[in-house]
Length: 221
View 1: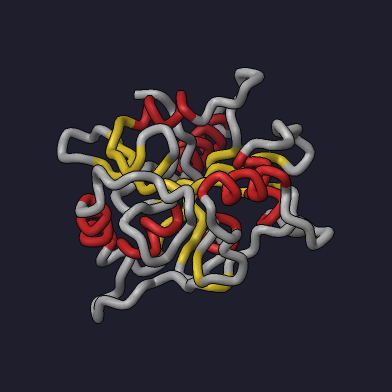
View 2 (view 1 turned 135 degrees about the horizontal axis):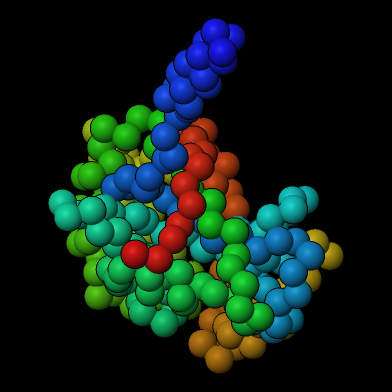
């Protein structure tokens, strides 16, 4: 019996030292990832993004969203999608919208600014763009915004400079060809595919050195 109590005490102390589960914070970024072996409709936008930006990885990130936690502890998502444009909606709506067609969930990868002292200000910046349409043109000069373009414009340092890097956009697949989706989309828009114009994408943004991963499980509220 005497041996039992020290063991029990040690167990309780170890349990009390176990780190608490991470929770979403205002300013966290949520990257939506599709496993590389998941079959997307070959002519969908998600498939076209995957072909152009997936690279050599087991996870193809196709979307980026901004998290906001209000004073009551409710989680809101600010992002730019074809369905909603630039919008602020509950986490439940976001999780429902990104449920895969077979009923499963994609990978939700949460990353946080290593220096998050300006995170709340970045979210307020994002709110200035609410109501704008989704940028199907992927143009850096129009009023419409796509998902990472919203983040790029909103996440600024103390000097007002973007925290994330823009780079020449790529719409070609690994064979150097434009997927049919992009060909059809820009033909309908009457515009050339904006290959090599400055822009951003979820895959590259997720790897920016200013971010760190956090282990957060997204659950319906």
